[in-house]
Image (cartoon, rainbow, N blue to C red; front, side, top):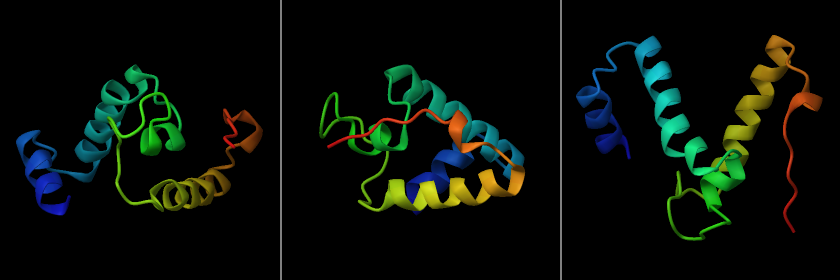
Length: 89
């Protein structure tokens, strides 16, 4: 992922942190949100089509990202009750 991610970023001309953030957000929007994979769980596991079109292969990915998101939600005062939640059993 590091090698291919770096070459992908270079190809897309994401040469600054700002460009990488905006480009990465665009990528997620058009490759996952437009595919109705709106949550970390859906991006990682794709329950509508298991084993296909998954964002990450690390089984801890959603937990790790959720921990980072919680940190920034707290830092910037984002209310957790405004977050869409789905529970899977």
